[in-house]
Length: 174
Image 1 (cartoon, helix red, strand yellow):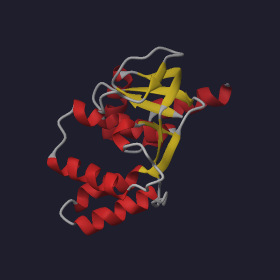
Image 2 (cartoon, helix red, strand yellow):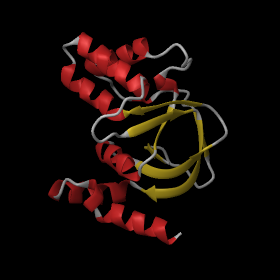
Image 3 (cartoon, helix red, strand yellow):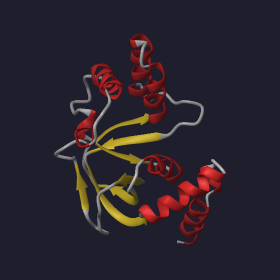
């Protein structure tokens, strides 16, 4: 599992629910606020915590890289979930598509329901909402991210990035 974060962590550090959400740290547009409000309103009652109070981790390295390329100064950490709360596993593509239908609240609600129902898109990008993880390895820093971004702009295929291929090879050798 992988965590994308701007903060600096060391191996064995514990990362827990943020006291201040990422939404509070960056200036969210009115559209992004609306999307998060709809996601919160459509959330099943069985999930007691707000999305903004969760940690987001990715099950696949390619999804973490994709997200990292969008986040300046980000790092990718290989993490393990501690024996704590697992809240939800959802296809982040539904939340991304919501940006394209921002003027249609009915479509936004349907996309939010699909996200919370655990449905998947053609090529799902699973984000897992948890409350506590531990850093096992520091996979990349912002310097790596800049190299990946340059390479990705030349050939927009994450699976063809040298960094991705190298990471897969390193994992197979372990």
